[in-house]
Image 1: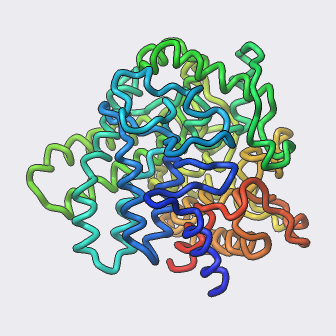
Image 2: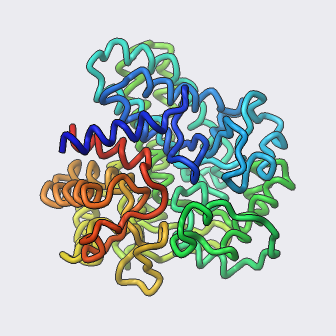
Length: 436
């Protein structure tokens, strides 16, 4: 395992670009929001200055309203579409003047990432000083979500694009595409020049993606207008679980910092936490399926599908013990067959399952990492151990890919890793799992 850990460190160092990381060469040549957070956790184990700089650079691109974009375009390159000229973040009056970016965000991992840096640190006083220098920016990001992305004031925030979910082409979104008929756009894909097109979203799916962005741009990325007009408006269990997990981390970190000037922030975070947890458990849990699901705000209905996002609430300590037990039973029944690696990104018993295609069925290290810690938190040690072993085994078999086939028989020849190769968060979270 030592060699594999050294390889993971090499991947991270090679993808480091002076003050931030790219997910991998060619396919993803910029800085991504949730990638950066998760990458910082890996760096924290062997190079804390890089972990801190990663977060600092991410937060430097924050808009004046607290929003953090999902991609920050630090460099000019034509290897990625859609780029800064398509996204036009400058249309929003409060966007960053320093950086070009998208007008979308991603799961807000930064709060729990700061707590993980503190957990991992060998010099906690120094790390706490760093945390103290950036934590208010993370708080402001949470303030943005609850003030701008919760139109019904219920403690649950919306995403307006599938890219904001992090689970880009999940089969869950098929239900929403069925309600839309966007124009056919003319554009040149870049991703399929680096990766087999069979593993990527289709051209027609991209039409939907671009159409939603066009609507947001027509309204200068105004959140109220987006809430009113976007055909995609979803309360996502993964996104909201990550936000609630990060709320709790900010509460805990502000308490450790111990400055009484932070008491108002702790009080506000606790209010968001209590309200959000209650709404999450009341609205996103489906009794029939026994797991958490997505709520389509635009069409006012639950999207009744089981995905790895359905189990993410375990990571944020949201379900009751009884619900957690039921969820884990369902996870093992549907996702835990001996011929499958834990945990496929979509229900392997569904006719929409595709074990090779991005978020339609492959295993992703970042979700496995969250589920591992979630399972441990609830005392499911044997299943957590399998989750960890499966994750390490698929990397040992294939290398540090973006995602992996969930079927064990495909791993025999070591060709079951897909998407980007030498992928940063796969390397970073592997390091964390190995040293945990």
